[in-house]
Image 1 (cartoon, rainbow, N blue to C red):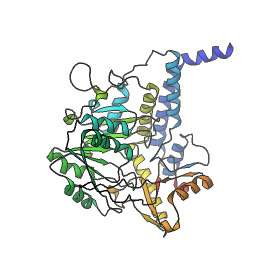
Image 2: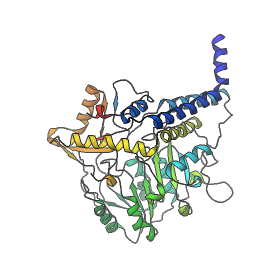
Image 3: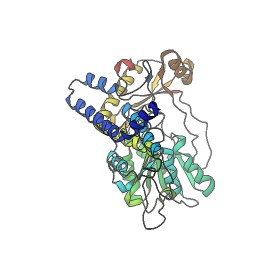
Image 4: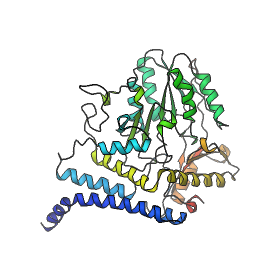
Length: 419
């Protein structure tokens, strides 16, 4: 009975716990502002994570690691909701949407909270209501989670896909723009490109591509799974019409957290059922509605705290740190003859993902990744091969496998771990 009484007392103090979380974020912000030594700053930030001692996590490209404050926020909200199940069960999470809009450089009525990039891409593709013969231009480097939506339209609505084949090693922005321009036809209704290439870590020159697509009325659809939290993303500067992302990667938010941006000027062309209003005009991007159903509000709350965590450190500062570590990865691994760098060197085309192709004569990428995990407790990623490149006449050539190893560097990593 004493234990039950103590538990009940803890539940009544949840508002105080929420306040304590805010104070922890403010304390982190103060420490960041007051710590002049760069190495000391990142040691301070590393203490915010609950990663096992000795574990080296170089795969935020697949899944991130929540800071302690985010873990505590989610757990606290679960306790709150389960103490009074109806209280807050249908919160519209406007405050979190506002944070998300600021995080992406958008207006609140352009941003929705989703579960991941795939859900966002599905909403966009099915909300476009493309017709038979309409074309979507994409690349052979896209992730399956951002491609299945288009393949669904091909199968069920006779939409046509055009795949431009990206070079294994990209020379410059002009080379990409030439490929895009060559593959746009009078039937192209949308271009679907990743912000950051999941195989090579190349950052797509979206703003320059937008200058080609927008005057033609072609929608620029972006799979931004690898962007927010690694890069200081501004969707307006990128010139994209839609942007879907997964916050459980680089933003370090709970699993099942994502964002979807739909530019206000094209919302009449992108009408997903998930945001359909039962009455009235426009679309309802609230976290809960008749068309979206019940959501995991504890996760959504944690999603907002993850954005607070990034803002406390500074999004530009985080991008700079991630890039600095990735440059060190490139520098050190470039010296190994068995590896060929796939990630572009130019700042505007690179990111905090670095990929190297392993000489097949020296082994399989998956074997190397397994060895690092089992012998060194280090998590890398065997990068996927390319999707089958389908030409206009629908004749697929062989699937490309670069035998690549992908390294993702985030703020809980350091130079010693890279070495």
